[in-house]
Length: 223
Ligand code: HEC
Image 1 (tube, rainbow, N blue to C red):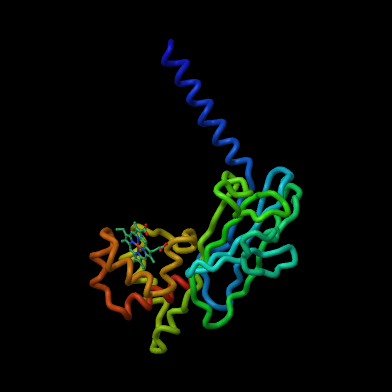
Image 2 (image 1 turned 120 degrees about the vertical axis):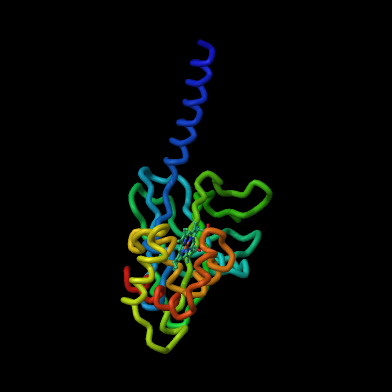
């Protein structure tokens, strides 16, 4: 009897928590790994009207932080000054945050954060911040080299497909269905680094650099 009550209470607490988290907006990215010429689309989707402003922070690998404003400019973050909001109290629905076509030679990893916070404040101020931590969402996106930029020689996506089916598909399945994950293998260096460091992939160190580059070309073509 007591157990049932306790269980029901716990369940209600868990469901309540899940409901409040699900109530906040979602940050969506069409891809989390891109090569030059592809376009990153970030959107903010909320199933109810947002009563606060929505902020979009862009954080580079070296920690430099920018907030994109309503016009699409992104001034660097200034402590003590009002942080520019990306969306001002947006209505329910899906809102475009960013559309960025990757230029040639642009290779880096960038983290995007959104959060709902108090309008006109420095939202990172103090110990408690002026934004609602429960609404914070993030995506890390890597902008990568094409396989052919690493090796101008003869790169074959079809040879890569054969190798992929043999060595990678068992764990990573169809690369088209796996955008945020195996897609990082578009950059052969990422696969080689994983082969060197990750226990379940270590045995794949036997694959040559050229084989990994062909696999990368296949992953880039399967999009
Ligand atoms: C035995 C299972 C297994 C096989 C086979 C395997 N992988 Fe992985 N791979 C993993 C796991 C597990 C991870 C996640 C590690 C982590 O948390 O970063 C991973 C991560 C990766 C990543 C990094 C993804 C990221 O988000 O940084 C790349 C790239 C990758 N694998 C490429 C490959 C390629 C290419 C092959 C075939 C040559 C392959 N893997 C074969 C299990 C496997």
